[in-house]
Image (cartoon, rainbow, N blue to C red):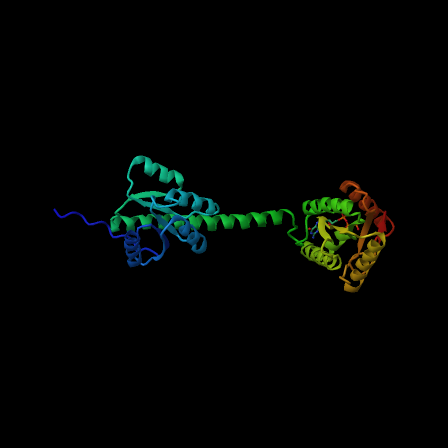
Length: 324
Ligand SMILES: Nc1nc2c(ncn2[C@@H]2O[C@H](COP(=O)(O)OP(=O)(O)OP(=O)(O)O)[C@@H](O)[C@H]2O)c(=O)[nH]1
């Protein structure tokens, strides 16, 4: 019975292969075989030159002799693995040294396979297919881990932002506030915190429906963002219809100016409020507190003072800001 011929290998996608051998005839013969299989070949006659070419071309695969003058294949394998820490380049040793200890040392140095020279062309082709499969798996893994990384970044972003307005949520603001307090202490800058609340928002919802209420909150958020637009300013939806602003390097006078601008922009935008005893448009009440340069007042104290100011603004007739 005729010997079964090897199963035809799937066509190999072109690989960039670094061939390292000090024997020009051996190197040329391997390069010729690889070239015929459609691969792109880079040749090096010693380990040091191979490493330079590896850095320059980042090949898909390294085929290297082990016993070479100067640095040997094991040295090359170790260097490649060191440079490869974020990825993985398959490396196969082609050697005339077939003792078990040589094979073990080659694999320990970082090789993925160890073939005895001369290598049968069919065996070499089969090994290339195996390495290509591994390379493709690695690419898929890399793509997957990049997807996961992006998903994690998005999850972190969502954990700190409010879905309705796109502003920071309470958690995001608390973090920003801690950073702002520390910065204000170190740089001896004043720090202002404002809490604002939409006046008679229950009536707004009751009159126009929750959907319109949501739209109104988006609008309020956008207006506040528009005014508090310094790079270090933070605007957050702090809860239901309550918004918070953290304004580093903002003294009392600056805070008053901003509060005035907020009241004015709601007047000029005049978003109708059909059932507000305060005005025909949506209005805000707010509490303001400013800590003096370097005082490092705790976050809870600042928020409590701003909340007391807000309570006073509500009780004094709404549509105003009270600074404490
Ligand atoms: N549409 C909508 N309404 C919300 C949301 N979160 C909270 N609210 C509503 O906001 C209203 C807040 O009502 P209150 O706390 O009584 O305050 P208010 O009516 O604004 O009255 P004052 O603050 O005293 O001026 C409630 O009706 C909540 O249901 C939201 O995400 N969307």
